Length: 291
Image (cartoon, rainbow, N blue to C red; front, side, top):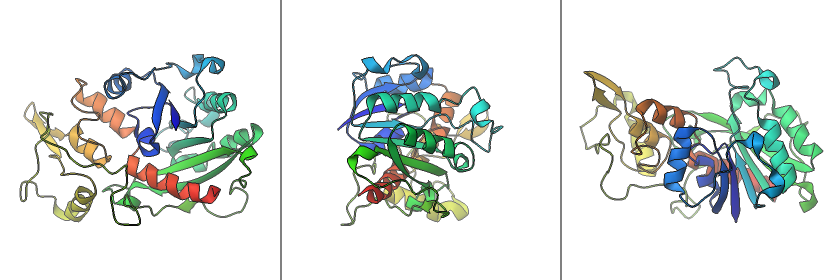
């Protein structure tokens, strides 16, 4: 299964999908540095607005967490009028390459701004879609992080249409990163060996007083790996530890941290990323609707 990735970031959505990454399109320097480290042999198509899709290798799946700023409640919610509204370029890629699936992600605010246009565009180019909102906390993460996930597929596959127009609220996921037989799912990550990151210190019993958050921390530790220290000291002040945010996002240690980026750049990339376990649960449930 070959995967093409748009707006890749650190690749959280691609980690959830699995398969072989054929190419990606990313222009943020920090993300490019991380992707080059994690996927040294995979070509970067660069700026999505400049790609000639007729010259790009077709893939089975296209993934894309297209920019959320036009739809996010944290911004001005300008929608189409935001210069960062790059959905039309995602539509063009899907139309040209016609993958078996397009797997997309965005903020939950997209439900009330822009989603209707996305679904309309997909229908216009011959793709049906399933969608739903899912929270990271639904799969055991110690934070809410509600996101919308969309799976689009060509209607030539004989699959049923999308769930729009029914008047029902989008389904909420209750996924769990364990398979039905109780074994860890492929996209659940565990620590392996000693830390190579100077900002990571293994937490031992009693080392950190998590207070009321301890049950949530311990739950995510059981599902992933031991939590790094939540803060580190710099210039006489305690600051949020990017390695802790990396852990909260369900990533393997060193996936984003430890590559020479500034703390600010690591934090920004992690804040914009996808929790792979959350995405995997959403994809699994949405795929059931296409069966």
